[in-house]
Amino acid sequence: MPDVLSAPLVVEFPFTRSLGPVQSAFLTGLRERTVLGVRADDGTVLVPPVEYDPVTANELGDLVEVAPTGTVTTWAWNPSPRRDQPLDTPFAWVLVRLDGAGTALLHVLDAPGPDAVRTGMRVRIRWAANRTGAITDIACFEPYESEPDGVEPAPHSGEFTDPVTGIVAPARLDYVHTPGRAQSAYIKALEERRTVGERCPSCRKVYVPPRGACPTCGVATAEQVEVGPRGTVTTFCIVNIKAKNLDIEVPYVYAHIALDGADLALHGRIAGIPYDQVRMGLRVEPVWSEGARHVDHYRPTGEPDADYDTYKELV
Image (tube, rainbow, N blue to C red; front, top):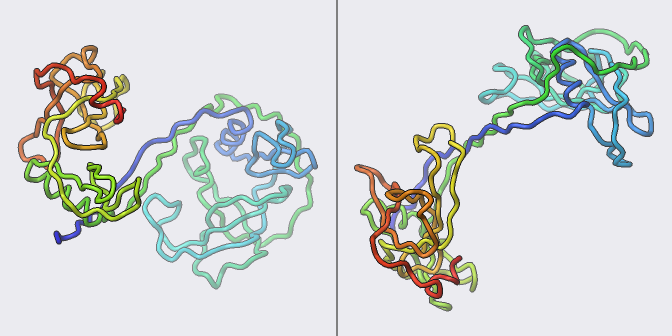
């Protein structure tokens, strides 16, 4: 049995969203060192504010200003901060109910150790020196000896100069991927410029990439089958938006390709032909980059197009 592979893997993308009037006012307020909440239908002040009542689902817009001080309702100590977390020294994750609010805000507390943190302790906001209209405008919370002031939240129009209308939140997941026996064999075969799948002993279908089990029959697969290298375009899309850090000019075509002998289409980029000439049934072959461990793209073979009946089950 081949050695099972393992490698670190990073999935990362920027998540971009526009803001409605409530979220826009909240984030712009943070930039101006003002914390806004919204009053729900039952009178509860929600901080952070939401656009719709969590109970009635009615649209909300009655904005109020709450205090930058509050009370810790619960907490958890983080002894080993990770990359891009608010503080690079050990800290506490805390839920803080700001004075005037009826709900708690999740953020971090700068404290010397877990013995210095307790439920019910009083804290206040430490504002970031440079504020842009994001939750990170609150650098953290810090201990603050005081009593709740009992002041009612003050109505606020939510109007600011140059309001924040959108945010970009980077999403990233770091993990170690272990593909397993079947996919390890598949990856090792790619190093030899071969494509292998596994055949189900029950339905006899060949799955590429192999999964170690038949998704239809639910039985283990072990019989290795080499497929391709040529195949047929079953369906495709034209990409018109350039991906970050991908050195491919748009437009280009990404397709599902049924390799000869396979019963499952895999995906790949089509090149060597104008994008508007790619079509279902087009016969293609792999093109390998020098020193690469995977197919760079597929190009037309020059063969006649495949008959639809030969690949219709794989569309």
